[in-house]
Image (cartoon, rainbow, N blue to C red; front, side):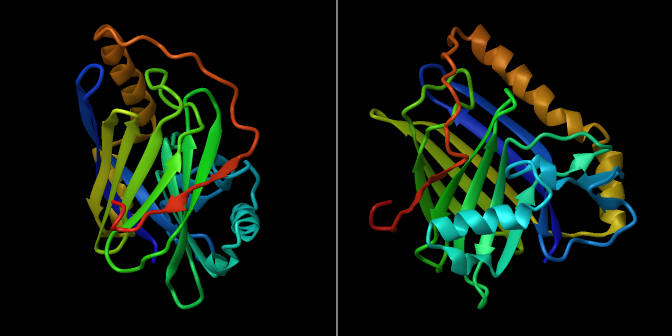
Length: 254
């Protein structure tokens, strides 16, 4: 189940100014109950590639328990049978995850919920918990934006997620819309690579500064957006609740 996904991340904004970006970054798919045992990967301590539970959830080391509590509170406890996390690892001890996905499966392997965890560059975190209603093909979900992410985007927007769960390939399309329609589209796409020491060594040799790359790219793109004349939006207080409820979208509504 554990795997490496080198993915391309793209953003295309159409209003009020056009702006686009594309970067390749590494994601790991990790089974919370069966982490990989590799020389170059460690859980909770430094290595070439590492994973820290405290980078997610409520910052504690019982990440599975945190997900289980929120699934139960939403009536989705069946999805706690197997939980996998799609997230960027730390490279040489450094890393930042703008978006991570907890994929929550029932005892028969069906995907029952997706928890979209968002971090902003102000040290804040919020997650959107979306049930899965349809199992055939791409999964369509949505949520109302209540968490401040980009200083160039208003609040009061709407997210629409279209997810191809990780398999041979993975794909995620996010449409961000206001009352006038979609103003930004973000995508993530990649193909599965076996998670081995050799694959991790190739990753680090090819992108030794990948742990810094994401934060550096965020600030570089922010500077370019600001130079296009898009002003900063005020940052409201973070939501009181660490998780808000999203929804499943049928293909008829999409």
